[in-house]
Image 1 (spheres, one colour):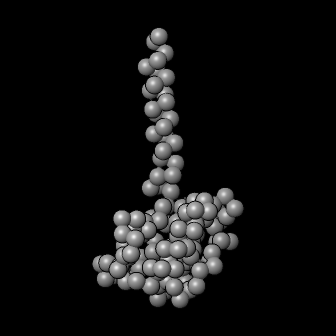
Image 2 (spheres, helix red, strand yellow):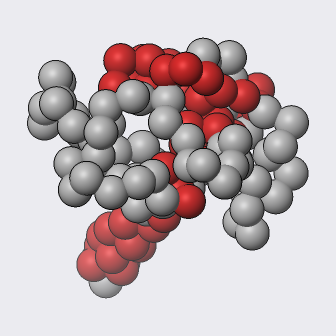
Image 3 (tube, rainbow, N blue to C red):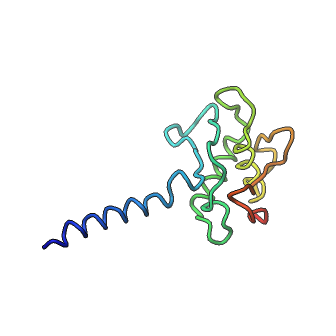
Length: 126
């Protein structure tokens, strides 16, 4: 049974590889899950990923979570007291493009929120 260790290794590698598909590299929203009623927001460390920006292929649960988060928390100040970053602006822009009210979010003075970027080209239709 020399194949058993090999199959175990292949299965383990596959699980790790697939687990990374929806991981932090895909632009997940930090909705502060440890604090359901935050008094301030944290800056987003990534632009919106495909689970939010891929139109009909987007993950409905993720999109609804994002819409809810920004509806409830989008005007709260950032915990560090600083202005929105480019990534924060992209998330707020996506919220508006998906039908959220612009007055529910804080956008930078120089922009109206952007979704598209080098890794998300073609998502402006959202």
